[in-house]
Length: 176
Image 1 (cartoon, rainbow, N blue to C red):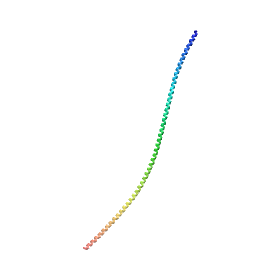
Image 2: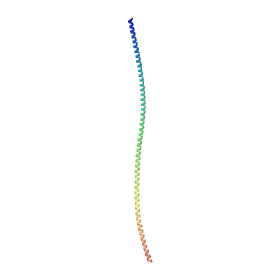
Image 3: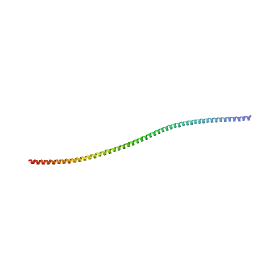
Image 4: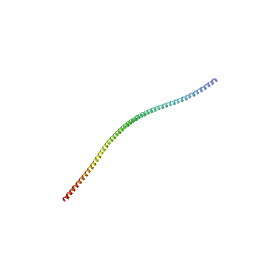
């Protein structure tokens, strides 16, 4: 019975050790479960944060893409407007160049016409001046001729008057 008591005590001690070990294992498992639960919760939080970050990035990418598309459309519209304005400016420049060419041709033509008219007027004036000079020269000659004739007539009249006076004087002398 002493040996049975010792065995019983030994078994009880092993049972207590087993229980303590079991309690330790249970506490360890509980601690590991708490750690695993914490890690799982942490991983879930990280996954949720990652998902939120991805969703935020996706929304931001979408917004940036929409803004870029809008900006591109705006730039295309502006480029088209500038091309239209450039084409219009080129057309206006071509029109102005044509207008300037036509105006230059008109001015050249008018200048030539003016020059022709001036040349004709000058030729007429020179011809008229020539005629006037000839007429003046002819008048001067005629005047000189008439002057000589008048002088000759005066001299002739004076001669006749002298003759008359001489005759008249001779007649008076005879009468006396």
